[in-house]
Length: 229
Image (tube, rainbow, N blue to C red; front, side, top):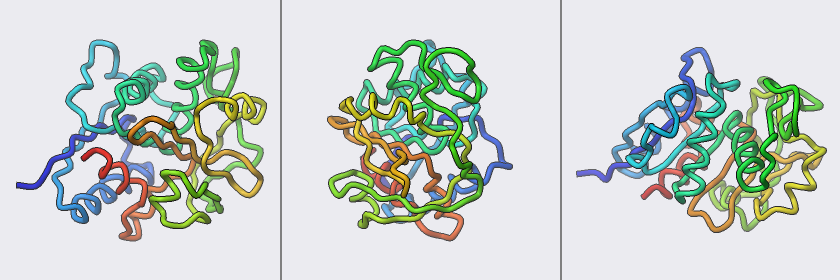
């Protein structure tokens, strides 16, 4: 019998979103590559709260599609994965909310918010200077990063569907944290974050899952599943 990985997909499923079309393809490729049974449960963000047990899951993937129906639901799941040392991948909206969760619960910025939905407080996520909607761009990864090891190269190109990223006003504050900023674009803006002293906690502003639309296993999806074992 194949080993099983129980994966929670955090996000509000929408079949019209390109990334959501790619996600099951990526997981099928991972299952075939590693000879695994990947049992996937989509958790709409408005179904996640303190009463929803998350103990059954081996790993978590917070996916594109924000603004979510429940910001607090998404943040609750991310915090659980971070604190309980569960493998976590955040892509696009998942990246943005991983930053907000870290700012609120590690940096104690309880007013940390998202420029798309909030008007007050420290908007750690703000509109990008240049929208990255259906665009590809280069990213440089650190050699000793999880992402760098997963890709097997340090200069990569990935696709985006994104209008918001880390507010550059807060980049220096983030750089002073244990949080690792392991991928940057050509302008030096943050595109990948990782947590040290965690089995696997990676978030990307780009959407690596799109590789599956071309029949390729996305390296970070493969790395997430391997970490869940």
